[in-house]
Length: 235
Length: 287
Ligand SMILES: Nc1ncnc2c1ncn2[C@@H]1O[C@H](COP(=O)(O)OP(=O)(O)OP(=O)(O)O)[C@@H](O)[C@H]1O
Ligand SMILES: [Mg+2]
Image 1 (spheres, rainbow over the protein chains, first blue to last red):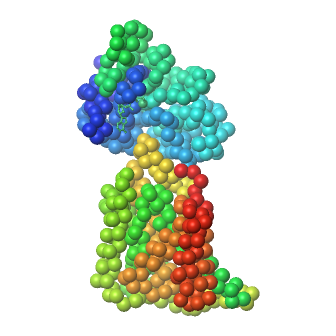
Image 2: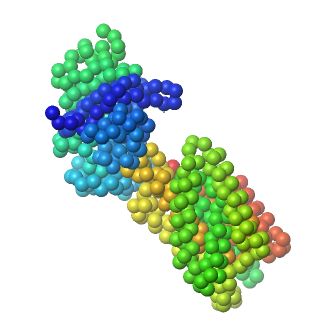
């Protein structure tokens, strides 16, 4: 049995005195796509921030290819090949579209993604390459955020609510692009409010409630009842 | 003609003020740090220049070859060793620490070089001048202004045309997200301070050639630099040059009316701009 690319072992996370995650266990195999669902405030963003090094955690609560990474800074985690598409896009307003992408690629990890392939994936970005990133629509900004993460050629990519606030047709076009992204052996963790969307793009699903895992299962076999129970804590 | 002369001389003086200001502006732009010790670091560069000139016999302008890298190294070490630790949500710690640094530097100068005013001798270039349409323009002020324009153009190029500048802007925009791009903000801040003190080295040498300086000379230079930055608008390098020129022109015009009014006129111009345009003349548009 191959080693998981990412494993969380009794992961706790705190904001000051407030504890946001309680003993979360999770494992992700190489090339696998998992979805994390859960209500607002369940701890999904906190989990992704922990993995990407933006929160400080105990070293061995997060392992990447077997190595403890919980204590690493975000720039060190990024260099290992983990990229985050953050909630709310968070582009650099002082940088143009192209510069946002280029800075994503500054780690120069080898792989299929570069300016050219990102522009092929999202052609509209090439037309707007010289625009300030603030001059794009929400959907276009999300494309930049995804492209920026891809530019580092990560082995593991974390998506935090990439469809939030976008029109359905934009969401569809972004999700249509997803198989072409994670198909190339890239593993992914997708946080998504839209449960059926989450189930359709993932191999397995985890549900979080108030900082704890309440459900884990194969995306094509978990029942609706089990999900609503895990999601809301009611039968 | 006297008035035209005052304006031209003030403009050239503004170049020196812009050099005082550029490092201050750069540091504030990248890491929101107000460096109270900036003026004393300018004076440190002047003393280093003096030491190099005295020990090697080099011309003060050639001493830059040594003083620039030394100041840049001091900047990187200062940032990584001390200043990074003070940066956070609270703006008070960096103010206090750089204030403390200012006091320490002044005492070091006093110990090392006594309280006597010092000056660097740049030879004939100090008094050389060219006549232009009835005006007599000093070579040194002209050179200073040209260097200021070159430095600002260079900083502008680094900021907007190079990967390093991209990193500066990204860290300035959002430190967390910049870290996600693999940028170590502590290192980037160190590089920004190194660049700022490299500019400070140029400012210090030109100051030490133009006028005499003593251990307490930093305070006034901090004020001039600060005023030039604010007049021009925070985070705008060309604006900083304009700010320096406005300050310089106000001072020479003030001095023309009454020699005692030189400094006062500069401060009044600063307060006037602040009252009319609280964000300076050319504030940065985004962010
Ligand atoms: N910066 C912070 N300081 C203090 N508490 C925080 C902070 N960020 C999040 N929290 C708290 O941590 C808990 C988990 O938040 P988190 O953002 O991880 O939830 P989420 O599942 O991503 O929610 P959403 O679906 O709304 O994005 C919440 O109770 C939230 O109030
Ligand atoms: Mg969230």
